[in-house]
Length: 371
Image 1: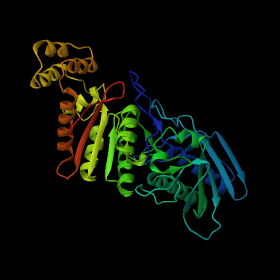
Image 2: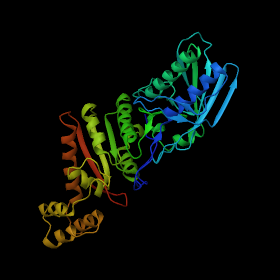
Image 3: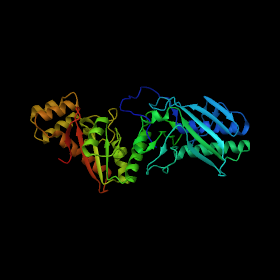
Image 4: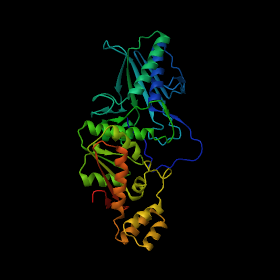
């Protein structure tokens, strides 16, 4: 539902990286251990679960307790080598026999787990932010224990995360209207380091929430400064802002299938040069600014030979922009227009208006696609 890490300040380490486990997998293991203890009086430790793709990891319990019709177990999340803000968090699950006459598993948000307050997410307003895939994993684990130990599987499952409210401030949850804590996530149960799938999923959910709220404009930005400046310039509410980061393609391709009338892209000159060149992944490790190409753009704007040579041999895109400015060339405007054209081609024939805003390193508006 929501990204739990920020790659702007994190560089991927070299070498083979260790995989980890999602909050959903940890909650599933804790739920299975607690329910097994409720039925048998003993906690399996380590507790083994089956994940959707066939993996069967085992988790050591950090805490456990049994009191009448309630049992709890807790697991420390290990995200492997992924820069996940929930790495090391204590995921606790309390399992209690249902007293309301209902059947199956009823889910509740404990301390540190958020509650959905806005439309557009895959859970109804008022529901605990335990995503559909983790719910299915927990239900399957409860059913497995019930079958093995003679239970009926009719329980309430309350998931809590230590310091979850503070951790949630480092995620998109407040912007998406998930209040009070983090979300319990994970489609496969496995965290693949630096796979970026959680970030792209967050982009999609951000668009869903904006559409459900009736927003006609969404703005995807490459970084914090461009987001703040774009939001202030256009007077947009927080839930219209999409933390696009380097994943222009992840945002634009989703907008092709889920269109919004007005799409704004905000970012720095270097990032949007890459988009203007046709790159949809703007990460420095996967695309670079072609200064020769940029010199050609300047030439088309009337740059003299010295300016073209200076841009071609510049140390950075920022230096190239400064050279264009000294020559009184509308270089940032032209890059914004070319980036808009790439974005428009990617979104396709949806009727959406695409606008691009370029900011310099000082946070000032340097160029825009619409003049």
